Image (tube, rainbow, N blue to C red; front, side, top):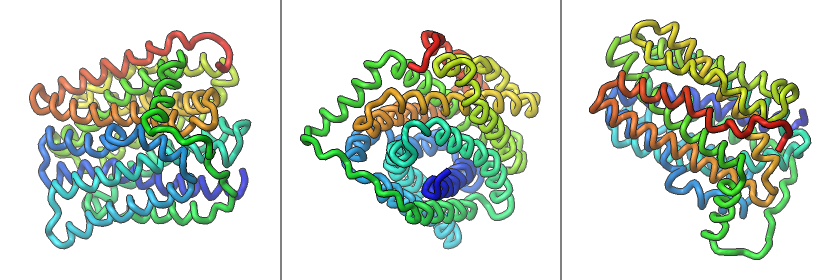
Length: 394
């Protein structure tokens, strides 16, 4: 691991810790502090991810035209400033749900550019021959942060309230920007080939993803899974806090169990790839998906549902390592930003749709109906990857 990669690893650790804490603190601020209804909680979740629907595709083309590291640093600073406004407003007694809506939207827009730039920066920093190992290290870090961050977030919310816990997330983004500033890697200048219309460059990314037989399957399965996962996560604060009045840290522990599963999946993914081949490993990593059908039992047994969530997230952890490595490997270097933006547009756009759909379904059909609908999708979406069972890395 080179020194520059260690600084990138530190930056990613800070940013992901912030994401994990805010993923718990933001909805709890809405539900526990501002008395958000299921529909309003759904809107809050939708706004946190809809930026990828609004600007995700053009962002890929823009990122391909720019140096990546300064863009990642700017995204960190914008997120830090936006999230820091929440505890300030709470301390002044002026925090409203509308401010929270604006904060999550602005943070989401910054995340679009930061994430797309980061995915394009990594292959240049480590080289494609080391990409799988580097990706595994970063995805495993995501799992660690989901465990530590969700657990820490739950205890922070219980100790200092959800709005004040968001002050921690602002500090983690500042740390991320500092680590990125320490990287000394001379990033290659973006290709200065003939400049074409933005819509043409966006179209190249779309044609790559939907024209490639396996990238198309990965995109479809990931979008469905993200939509259903967000439906579950929108309902969890309602179930834990509003319905059963459990302490906030119990929700953090439940989500941390998912993080532990994610970490386990990401850790075993490289070994699965060596044993089975990359494509077969992508398919078989989804074999635990039917466990998601136990998630709606959270009312009867939080332990059973927690175990089901951990197994469901282990599939996501393994899949992320394998799919990110695979899709980066088959994408030409000059299209990495647009491929990543197209995938993020679909995956994170699906989160926005899932949040809105989950909130609406929860409001009008009930929390239980929403959980069962989401569980049915999570348990079956992986079947779309069936054609990838064949051997070989491509």
